[in-house]
Length: 106
Image (cartoon, rainbow, N blue to C red; front, side, top):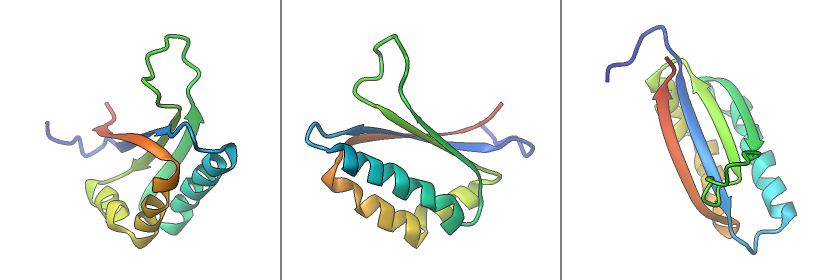
């Protein structure tokens, strides 16, 4: 599918934490993620939250982070940015799994 030039690109990140992850470790991940929008140009908006669905279909994923970019180039710059890479390097101690999905908002 070709991108709509007037659309925005959403970058959705889901985290499932290890059973051994402490609340302090999880809070540190959330706080560290929240620093990226001010450290990396091209992020139009950022939001996050924890799963509150009553359906029970989250498969262990508890935290959702959504970043919005105006262009694929801005998203690509975010992915290789040193601040993003440093953040990713800190996740090993507490993260069990992640799921990332990008889409052009319709």
